[in-house]
Image (cartoon, rainbow, N blue to C red; front, top):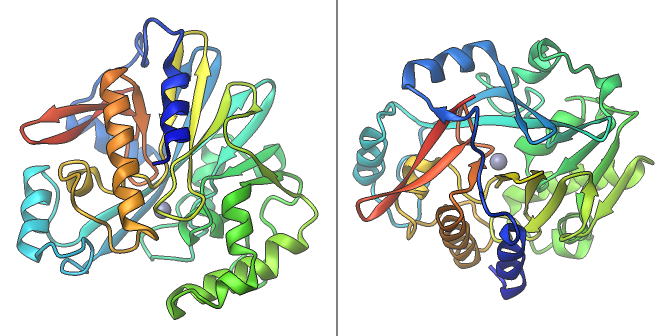
Length: 321
Ligand SMILES: [Zn+2]
């Protein structure tokens, strides 16, 4: 994480004496986690802002040996076991967030669109509508980064037709400039070129796309905070209203049982692994210092809670909402 970003994290918490969400959030017995996952959505308030989490399913990844750099399958399975998770696969859950603020309905990322794994895509298959959100009701969509599981929900599988044609789609300028630059695409590994090509065939041709800068208020109570590393321009979203705040960290930490418990592990598909590791450490330090409520795109339901120290590592404790 850059010094600038570190300062932004500090600035985000200055002035609020009681940091983190309090009140209706309480810690959640694990059986209830299954209940909200089954339901597919849940909502809570951050001050005056309504937050709705939308569950989009899970990718059952069996690449145990290649998921974390130089970490053996045994160690990965051991970390999953310690967290009470299955060892049949690495559960990469998907959940995105709807924010209602200033009279607007804003999506933070758009899900997998049912185009990644057979066990994901629940939002596009009625999950979003079940939460009362139809595409015509969405005013804007803020994109944390342009990986498939965050943007494929914006486009139909075969035609690339827009799913939310009436919404303003906003992407951080660093991320947008990277993925829409053919010169940078040429330097990407072959496995990533298809993604860049699809981005270049869609976003620049859509007339409802714009970019946002970090450290500015994009919508009432919503700011982007640079969290680079997972992708070149990855951002977190900081939600605040009154003295309550929530930090949605996107993919800065994927699968807390692995990468929060072991902050020195590196994720194989982080774009810049050293930068991503530094970003994770900075987020954890800030979240603990401020007792801040955080959420992650791949944390599983419910995806808001606290980071706590746990021996030499850390653990995510989801909240009851
Ligand atoms: Zn992701």
